Length: 297
Length: 286
Image 1 (cartoon, helix red, strand yellow):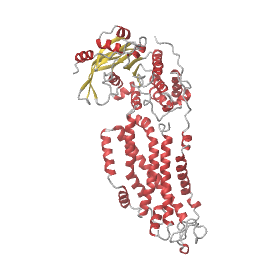
Image 2 (cartoon, rainbow over the protein chains, first blue to last red):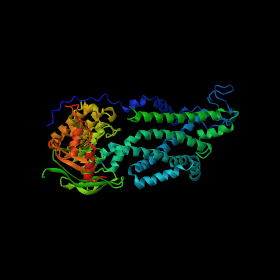
Image 3 (spheres, rainbow over the protein chains, first blue to last red):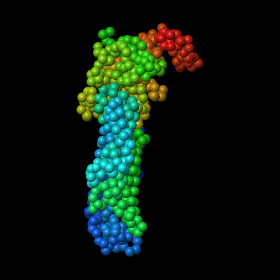
Image 4 (cartoon, rainbow over the protein chains, first blue to last red):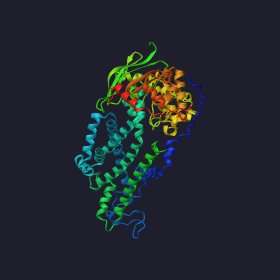
């Protein structure tokens, strides 16, 4: 009937490279990730690294300029504020709150948003309608005002800041994950999985979810950048942690008032904030490229 | 009829999206164990709808209005989802149309192959992996080790289709539904894939329902053929008798329309308009 088979079998072209290796070839991942890693080390070991106590006041040494400008004291590399506290040490300590808020709030927002987004995109119908309407309503609130309102209700403090960010920003994850789930669900491999007899839940967790992870990782990284900014905003208006804990936002608020004669008090925390958010964004973009097997082509 | 594997009886369906337009009209077809049956028709003839109805993956807009799909004495249409899931991927499996999208882009080939084996045959992770490796060798992929560790986009279209064939035959099903498995491939690869399906089917004694629009493919691989138009069976019988002695004017016109490699100057006659008109009248399409 059928002829005997003599087929020149094709060969897979390349052995797939390991994920770690692909990651490290991305300059964005290297720079962004490197900076965040450095910041993480600084945050953890701040007491060992900081040259001075960030809270120690010395009015005799107030408003010292940074080390490269005349009229400074040795040991105060970025100068001091009007109360004589060391700016560099305060910046280093400020990274603790910033990173803690960034990691915790982005992870929690991702968790809530992803679960709801997956359910909405996959099960559709009423599940989708309810979740999507909630997201629509949520996004109609101005985020900064809402966060200030939330922190005012919860009372200030780092946990309130985290709660406010999670409550506001889970919608970002929900929307993207839902759209991505819808797109994946159209593809043939989902139909194929259904014909194998996998249950709907299993298809969602084993087939769809892994294909959403690259997008998710990029989003989490971006969200961390956003969370750093939101925390700075709340510190700026004095609604974050108490004022004796150094935060970048608090330093910006303080520096803003003295911009005309001690400009470094504003510029130093702004620069650090800027670099941190940029690093998170770069890391997110790079991870997305490196992890998505389709984009890697 | 003792060795009948699949009996579709009086199957009718309508599409709600198109205002209740009938997409299947009283379709009968049967498949014996180890038989390869071609399901042929133009786009919209209902061949894919039948395949989807058998696999239980009809879109929500298509509604079955009558008939039975009898698989080994059990009616698939009346089955509850959990029962159906037991049969799908175990006794019935699918070779999908497009190898570009039918594999999960985010997971390695080996894992995807092993999944079904673990779920349906209860193999351990290790045993499933060994079996997956063996299957890749069975479908003549050279260096199966490498293929196991690859992501789908790292393989060519032909290789991906081989992987899908391996996946379909992995659980040694009794019925394989092949949904135009060669349309997305170029012609040279097509022939190899057809031979491979025929080979796997002969080794395992599987019944295959082969959906295609190409009578040339039917002639190569099928034992029998069902020809559809407008959701109705036009002609049905062993490949030889249908192709050599077609009963219906539409079948004759279709065969005449196909390219003839032995006589390149002949063939490629479009199906005449009056044949279509008569056909539409016969079926009852306006």
